[in-house]
Length: 159
View 1 (cartoon, one colour):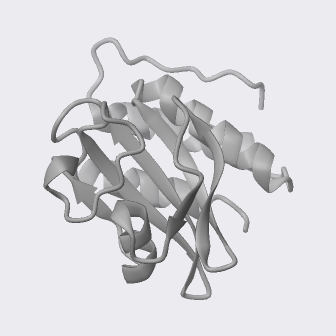
View 2: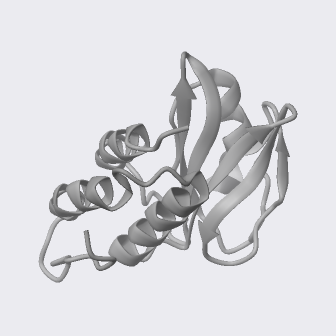
């Protein structure tokens, strides 16, 4: 696939954008074995399609989440198990949607501009190997539509 997304976001619903974007992401990373390249392209595609504040991956290394490819302002480099939204998603192996990060106990504020967040764990053999973290500078940005499609997208990534 060409390294270009074809998106019609002007009058489209969020779900319509995901429906258009998801197969393009699959085609973009299909057959590419380099994990970093695939994570980088997925982050870039999501950022381009939705103009999220921050999109990126944290990879489990030595019992910590370590910053991987991302799009957006600089970020926290390491997150502990069970710490913040990302560490909690890792610990619980479930997607977490936070409408207002200021109300999440133990939220790690990598940027004070972040207002809401969704974190999707990426598990292989029932063990979390990474998380997809998406932040918005708007409150209540994420819902079950994001959860459905982001969960589908992370399944395409070969860890």
